[in-house]
Length: 195
Figure 1 (cartoon, one colour):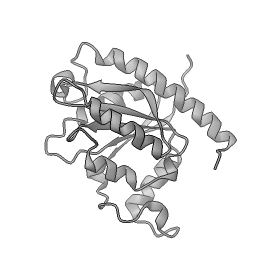
Figure 2 (cartoon, helix red, strand yellow):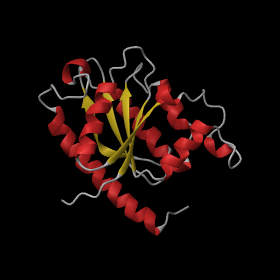
Figure 3 (spheres, one colour):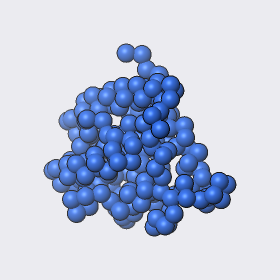
Figure 4 (cartoon, helix red, strand yellow):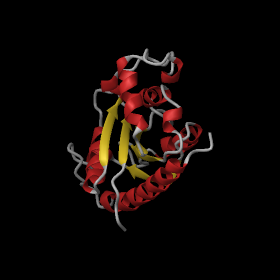
């Protein structure tokens, strides 16, 4: 299948000292770039948005804080989103939801994909379930597949190298699906959107 490169944003929302999910970010970013995509990593800790008070769209044109404006400009050209999410108390990391919640229309009619991880054996399965409804409400519904990284510190090295018996193979199907949805929705957006 011919591959046309997409613009893809990876979101990551951990503020913890031991940010194990960075391994999954690096793994997915490396996989996507090897397939010819342009990937931008948006790290909630680095972007450092305040706890949500006003969404980007609530600022008069030209008056949004610089970090919000940069993200809005980035999202305008984004074809798909990947959320790398650890499971906190069976749900979404607060840093991730705060990062994402500052925008809405910018996500519309673009697919998302969930990479869930945990230090235990369940691979963030419960956060993946929570994210599906959340992402649909934001207008960036998740593709049917999810990539689960169990025992992340054993499955991925610090630079994102796969040390597991399964991740690279699982990622291949997952990313094939993301590419299909990304290309399909990009083509349809070019024709116009319902609202």
